Image 1 (cartoon, one colour):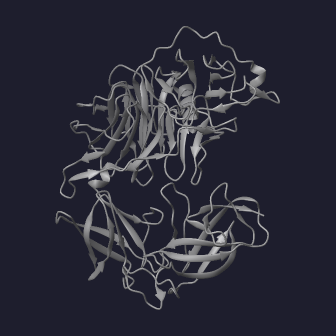
Image 2 (tube, one colour):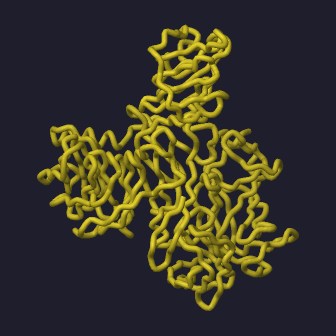
Image 3 (tube, one colour):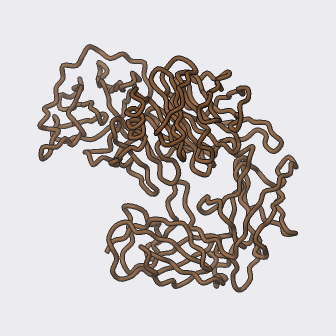
Length: 566
């Protein structure tokens, strides 16, 4: 999609949206499942199968693999029946619930399709065996994003949730959950004596809203409440609170957005030209004033004053390569760098948050962390296509650059504890960003989905869930930020294949908090800014996921998971 914003340092920019996971749930059924389906039916000649979802959308397939939107109307209520005992094994449904509708193919009486709370299912032998048809059906159940980052969690009906973990490929995983959001609503409902439809908490402050549009705020964790305010008609569907300023809250009241910056003493209207339909979710970055709204008509954003009362600002749609479906929620990750959006049926999409074009940020290219860097480290500058970076008389090689991100390497000769980076972009605009510096700042490389770059040295394949590494094996870790090497190596040049320079700092690796043998720690042959650590796993390990982290020069990396088998 094309995102256009004019500022002193950014022109026309491109957001690169990616889908987080897929649209099916791995719940241990006959096949991956999806959300509820109301009706299924065949076309009169049996060449096409149709499915109507709970929201009323209809999709069709002719190859039983790919679903497309359809305008077909459902026929009269089906009289087809599926013997329930044929969908059960040891008393439990292999389809995730009994069928609510069924259809028999006009071409073959043994071909049966069933619909239920877990999607669409097909049998070619009269119901003796079943397979799911949910892989490409845009029917992921979900109503709200509960967490966004390396692990994404989405609320579904009732008190359950689904999660997408790094390395998972099959589908979203069902998780048991206490659902703190529902617990907070229930607690506030009991305290206020009126049904609460949305609530948010930060520090000692709690902000809540009701079905009739009233808004409350409490400064003492709900012990006492300020008198309710009412911006307009309609239910309060979402509330955003900020850990950096608990008195700040944003609330969706029907078609409108309300803001308080003084703990609910008064709420003012930020709606302006916003035409999102019913608003389902809100997220904001208080540091920049960026506000994102998810509504029935899609995703919208604005820059608002989140520190004091001021006039409402203009809203703009974020359109383009995103599903044409209601947006149910929007959420920024904890660092405010990535924006996650949940679309009805289509699942979660993520991209660099658009406000980073206006306020670029430096992060580790390995794990997206914003901590100190080290000599030789790879950095990503989010939100800017830079042409040159300088600091302390040193030139930082620009290794790659796009509209949304640039990658540079810290010179091996960098010294001190803080650097002021002078950035120049493609339009000759200049900006300065601060960078903290340590002798080592270790991190483990993660791929786009958050999976650690761990390689089984014997087989030369990535280690992932479903592809564990055996006890006693050698494991290679791709890392960054390990500092200087011997012999010295030029910045911006790929490491040699033979005899790559060795890391100067002592390197240790821990698996489940126990040190393991490190057999080498060098620059990664053929790469710029990558380091290669090789370890040897012990002869006996606990089977299952284990925690792995590394230490260089006394500094520790973030934790990642490695699946082990005996």
